[in-house]
Length: 331
Image (tube, rainbow, N blue to C red; front, side):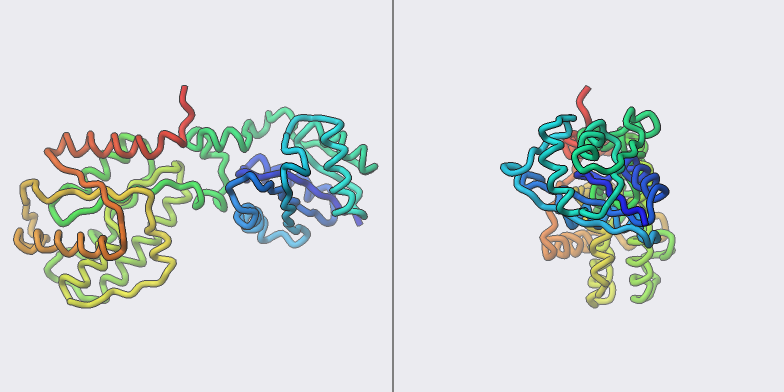
């Protein structure tokens, strides 16, 4: 029985890592993936373990283990060094005494295997097949989003929610922003499930909440780390309170799906337009009060968007840019 291991920080886990692990599985009967986590890193070992286990949940001949260490005791470098490799190989020999194979995508894999007196098989050291590194993903998540596995995306996604009462331009602004940033968009589920704000049942709101969360979850796995979302669960709860004087109870997973990085609230100072499906203007303004009350109740920090349509778009773009700039490499 050939037992092999791969090791790394997986900070974060990317498709290059995934390909290396799948390659390793073809070279052995049993594989251990060792996640090395130092005391100076800010992504938990349990999070990284979750990423890999979810990706390989259908594979039975693999296990994922973690090794937590202090950088004062173990060198924290990816440079190919005989001295560093000797220190780590001693720990690996302790952890894997009966393993005969090491698979890496690094030159230092040869050094480690030599010290351990086991075989080393290299995979894509030149990064020609998968031109990506964990550092490049961390430095520019937007450029490297295609290299982020689905299991990792929920932890790096950036959600922006557009809120406000009826006839304040939420849908228009949502579409404008999605086009401007070339990113994913989640439309308001209520517009598709409820034809008229004046004629619907309380239970319809449960369908809206469930469907909206479902669409957000789908968008998380899309082609952009940024999602612009038209309304959220707080709006749905506000309708329940305002129309039916009832509390809409939903499961925690729906709240988790709706949780966003930025909430933009559109002021209702703009001209009211009745399209035949909306509440009256007076009720629209009372609903605005209801929305704000619910959001305050859930401690949601809002950024108010005011002014004419052009100014609202400009203000929203500027605010979102401030949010995402740390995630984009500066050229």
